[in-house]
Image 1 (cartoon, one colour):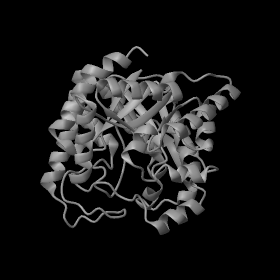
Image 2 (image 1 turned 120 degrees about the horizontal axis):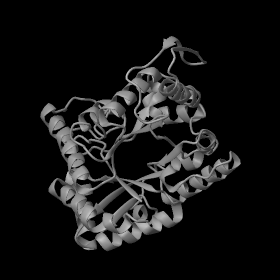
Image 3 (image 1 turned 135 degrees about the vertical axis):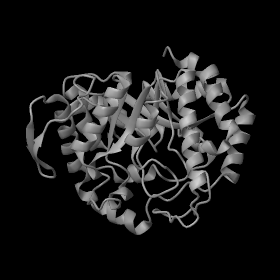
Length: 365
């Protein structure tokens, strides 16, 4: 099993806890600078402590994440993360220029000597407002963009592209990717359509903002489709992102986490207001499984979050047991652990405890 440390680079300062997009009326430049530095320091520590990956993502217009361009933060990470792989999970390619994305991945792959993981996502539904892209086109744009990016990596002669959504007269990217035929690709796979597309194109599948029962069902569908296309996914073809806080004891971990929820800065948010959410649902964005996709975001008690595999919480022995249960049900070979950033020194201690007391015990699974 591989362990990845994820940071959304949350903003640790004054912000209004309202629906997206969030106004910048009480924004603090000093708090934002400190927040980004805190995430960079955590990534450097994760690299030193033996995590296999560090991972970043793309989000816009909110204190939930200060990385609207994950390529930029990944560029900074190339200078401080010297051993672990750097996973961009991911770039929201339907709202971006896919040739530019291919070039940026190639640059990062060259700087790191081939340590880049390429997550290519459709993005959260609300973010199609960011660059004025029709969410009804999201799946078509995603599929075309991913094929184009792969061709940018593999085609050595200049070529043109004329598709439904993208058109380029001539493409020949420099630098080229180090990994051949390109960095390992993952895409989000909670919907049946995504699982089928990933299986058909032999790319990995990732799960975030979900729970183990839903992810296990989606993973089963992915494996079934892969067999239909003549191959069998390996454990490393599946990533599961989950929150984690490790304390010295179960009671300490629960108290730390509960206190952070009560007193931490208001960086959570409703990712889309009800009107926007309803309009997006009407476009077919969620695919064939509308109810389960929307229910992934429903609030839950702390006990329910742990029981459903949305959170790992406890002392080292308890967290190992929770990961083992998750692995047995889901079979994901890469777990993308996200820590609660607003705990300060307790967050740092949680990462250290995980690396010292948990990681050695799950490494050989």
